[in-house]
Amino acid sequence: MTTETLSETAAAAPKFSIRTVLHNAGIGLALLALIVFFSLFTEHFLTPNNITNILTQITINLVLAVGMTFVILIGGIDLSVGSVMAFAAVVAGKAITLPGFGPAEAIALAVVAATLTGVFCGFLNGAISAYWSLPSFIITLGMLNIARGAALQVSEAQTIYSFPFAFEEFGSAMIYGVPVVFLVALVLVFIAWFVLNFTVFGRLIYGIGNNEEAVRLAGHSVARYKIAAFTICGLTAGIAAVVYMARLNISSPIAGIGFELNAIAAVIIGGTSLSGGRGSVIGTLLGAFIIGVLANGLILIGLSDFMRQMITGVVIIVAVILDYYRAKYAAK
Amino acid sequence: MKLLKIAVAAATGLALLGGTALADDKPVVGLIMKSLANEFFQNMMVGAEEHQKRRGDYELKAVGMQNETDFESQINAVENFITQGVDAIVVAPADSRAMVRPLKKAMEAGIVVVNFDVALDEEAKKQQGVELAFVGPDNRGGAKLAGDALGKKLGEGGNVVIIEGNPGADNATQRRLGFEDSVAEYKLDLLDSRTAHWETEEANQVFATMLTAHPDIQGVMAANDSMAIGVVKALESAGRTDIEVVGFDNIPAVGPMIEDGRMLATVDQFGTDMAANAIDMALDVVSTGEQLQGWVKTPIELVTAK
Picture 1 (tube, one colour):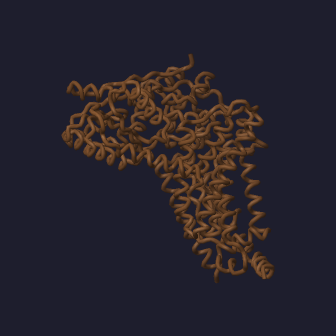
Picture 2: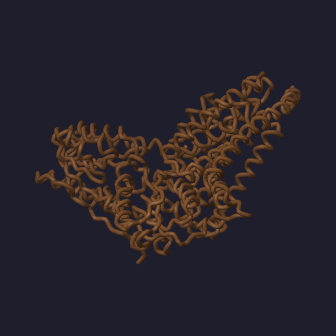
Picture 3: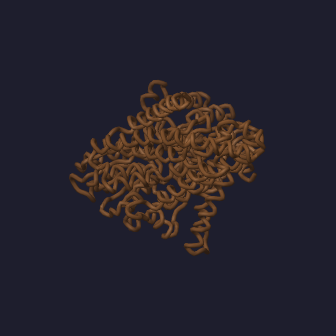
């Protein structure tokens, strides 16, 4: 029984891929148009330094958005990632500044602390919303407050600083002008892409987003996969915390306010449907680029902060409208 | 579970702060702070609590806000304090206009009100017919101290940018005006001015992009130290050591940066003592009945490498 459904799900995969390719081509074209526009109208946009800047600037959002893609694909939402990132950063900041450790141990300890904190919060989000079948919107809204409060409590609202030098090195390291932290994010995108497209787990994530009941009737534990999706999202928040710390060399309990909205925006602009079941992490990658390119290019053009905020809002709405038409034509 | 406990404990703590009966006849001071998520106000609160223990001749009830823009909770706090019949309210207003009316109500109820940290709006006070002194630092003057340090270092015609705080926040506006005063006085060239919402990561991104647009930047004025840290990090990644950065607040994390020259200066407005000093003044008014007048300026100091 189980194997039959699995092969059915797998059979549905190629159709998805073609649609996915079309989706991504559209977003890719939009990104390309933005890049052409900014290269024409600003003199510094396509310089190597600025490209490095953009890659650095989108890294945290991209890492968060990869995890968010899993959650949105199952038809959920995670509003807590910004706060969880701050909480993870503060716990890791406390760990890394513990006396009596060498730099290598301290860094390892911090990475473990950050990822475990993220995983723990994500697991709670998933377990609570799955066990009681509650909307993840409200559970993660609760977690947004819990994690932010916990971050402030643990740090006593103080910025934690003085991390080992090697950690800072990692945060600013480059390979051929590409920030190492961005490569970390790319590896995450690749892993997520592989998992979502070529594993049973990944196909079931899509399956749950499309038709939860069918997956349940096929004998799968929907709850377990939901918990997994939220745990992955928590994990990426923990990884984002490590990136934040390495880049800025501080842990601030007020870090990441509103980051969840940017991550959601990247996923949605990337063509993943808010109702779940449709979309891809490659789209998310492109979505993160669109947001990053826009933020960077509009400053280079010299647009005021307020106009910049308005345009970012317009782009999100336009992306969702385009998605509406894409979905409509794809259905024909 | 531990998290939940902490959250529950915090919630109960807040509820208790609002609800304890006024037992003995010591004067009661209601302290209304801004966001306790902000390091600056957190330190101020700790300073006030220590001050209460040291003096011991008054009772302190302190409330903070969830975030910088949560005006509503400050207004509620004033109303709660009126109901409880405290002797004095010492308040750092989150909004210089919205707080005037509730504070007027408190004064009419015979409560001594001391306004510190951010001054209430003069126009709004006039409209409501409120006379109230202000105890606090000169944010504009402080920012000008930092801006002047930068101006002296760069000399006439230096290219500078400003990283602003939250648009619409009074201290953000005052600090921007202070920086602009320095720009005018030292005939600096202001290339760009943008907000990074007081936040390190955003300042890092915004400044990195500004630096791309204007590679000839020579100096940066950041409206707080958290943002200055983000600027310093952006300079490090860009490999630029020729750009001077000034900040504001003197938080511990910038100490090492000022010592080793990554930052030129910051401004200390002695936030830890600020609430405590305002409480002292409120208690003086309660005991002597002599009102404060005008603007009681609290100390500010430019901090540079020794």
